[in-house]
Length: 457
Image (cartoon, rainbow, N blue to C red):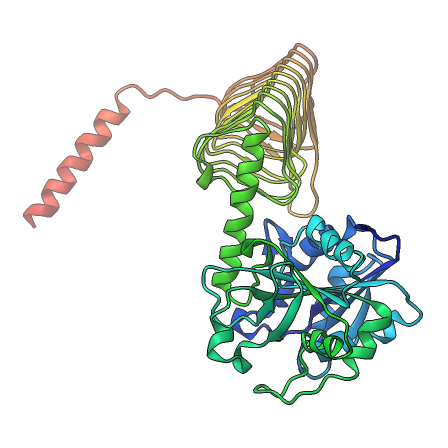
């Protein structure tokens, strides 16, 4: 029995829905899950199958979708009128002119379908019984208004019916239609041309091709997956639910891979977060896209990281923010209320308290004192600060870029440095201190007398 196919694969993604329940100017399929638009989540899974052709069917908001997929080798088809899923798939016909092979039909608002499930659908299409169509089914806790699949124990479909058109017995069935389907190209558009809209909604239903093929003596098959994998997004609440499902799965995965999450439910990953083993992540940590963390690092509570590389044995936080371009060398330390942006901290460098380091190169074993900042922006342009190995930046110092601090140099606390500091030099930039003995006592006496006089009056 064959379980694989060498036939070319085309993928049709339906993304023409109005998305009115999202109440958003952003196209529904572009709302993010784990920092990546839903549609791009799905297309990333599709890429594992190396499809020969990809078509996204769009309607309203097409410009946004076209921009999102630009340069990815994806054709766009337009569904000007919303006349049902069968009608939507039919709009891809011109884009697939000349294509011969298998066609996988997916939905842009069902983003968590894995490449393994997609491959299983295509492989089922090529088993010895050669089903006309393969439908992906699932069994939700609440079948609600999903279309139902009536099937034999071995997965042969006897009937598919939309909820609106189902009778009481059919509605009692818990095997539901996800809408995802695999069909041979030489069958798909011929069957679509035959479907009608004589139903409760007056729409052209994609599942009707299953019944048409059955009428031709060609049965179809269903394979099943978990309900969470085919969860769709039509509202903000459903978006949050799918996000929660994705995060729960990712947390479980990283812990299996040797990462310690102290309070897993409070940690949020991006789609591309990379974490090595023996990393510890404390509660309430959020990862934006583009973060890599090496072995032995500790991310303390209430940190936000995006576009950052965290080296071996690094300590971050609590309450730290790493912005894009932050690179922390081995055993560097970034402490509470410290922000790093487009800056490299060398091995063993420390910025432990209340500091901003932006557009900077910080050498090894540098100490940046509490309250110190790099002044990188002049109102028009960004400028860079370079700090040599083992330099010591005293607390509450301002390094006014562009500026270079030499190796082993010391910048005294409270200094505003606008010129380069040589290796081994001490730079002290402070106004002269004036001492007026007894002045504060005389001031307080005068103020107390004035306040007392005002109360009497």
